Length: 482
Image 1 (cartoon, rainbow, N blue to C red):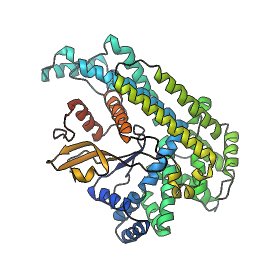
Image 2 (cartoon, rainbow, N blue to C red):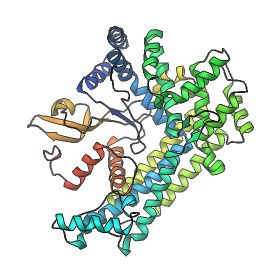
Image 3 (cartoon, rainbow, N blue to C red):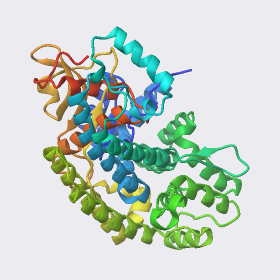
Image 4 (cartoon, rainbow, N blue to C red):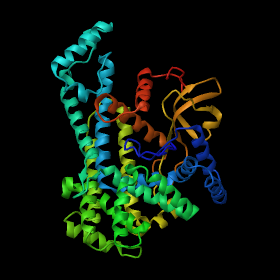
């Protein structure tokens, strides 16, 4: 079996923009080559890769179309009530986490993480661990975090409840009737991005590339289960599936209003109910009036309308921004960054909603969307290489032409081993976040808070970043990082 990297992106609600992940220097170099090539040369490169083995072909198709895929994730996140609610919870956790992590750094030398798990451990388990720590280290017992001190106990409990809410939102799952299939929210979002990416492959390279890429992609249900289920509805009726109606179905599923529908606003819940409904009712086609279908689905399923969801987003975001403005915090500089970040996020949401309302079909119609990416809000870009023993060597002069380095290891005065960087240029149309470093700084704050408090999954990049934050290196390219 041929092994290859399935995911060259990875939407992360902690970074407001696009995250690109490269597991090899080869894939990054290919991305850079394609980014700087003319459309004609991109097609020529694509035709060469069509003749290579499956892993090379899949690599090319993924790398050459990952930006539209991830941009769709970003735009969906700005338009969807689900993502806006998740963003508000993320900001809340980051603000509280910023204050609490500063307190922990100042008062303790050993902190069990994540605290969300540690604080729920039975006393006997804690006692064994504490005894081992005190025996193996020279740390004074009063410098070991055991229980929250009185001055921050309430704040930590509130903070952990925020993470519980994030976990419930992210992990919410729905099981399809009479089918052993579990759908989670991220899979509905993934369907939207995959449909966009497939449209882009078809537009640029044609049917042969499209068929080959879809065949490889189908090896992972994680990315295609929602799309596979929708295609089955059309094929069972011998109707011709098309990108546009598939996009319309998925978009409606993303647009549940949490103010009116509560948990029923979840994308996976809306998909489950719409999927069951469409088994026995008419399916949209390429030339359909999708606004009529949206109204039908909302009315028949007794779920919120897209127009109401937009209004709810704007009201909820404005209310939350005002609440944050009235929050009193000690860390003034970081707090000011949070306020600016929140205001710019809300501005980006307003702009996306305004453009969508002006001509909804430009967003629903994936052909129009991928051919007019500059029509929408631009996305900051962060690139990341895996945090392992493998080295990704760049000359400092070379990488700093296009990127601001965030995490690296100094090899010599001219070269670094790169792990994370933020692009100077953004992808898409109107720039709202004039400085992508702000987005990266807020990402760092969220990662730090997650690491200490949350049982949400973490990877090696999170551990490495926390090491950097604790070390607080003076030099930009720090040789002590890993």
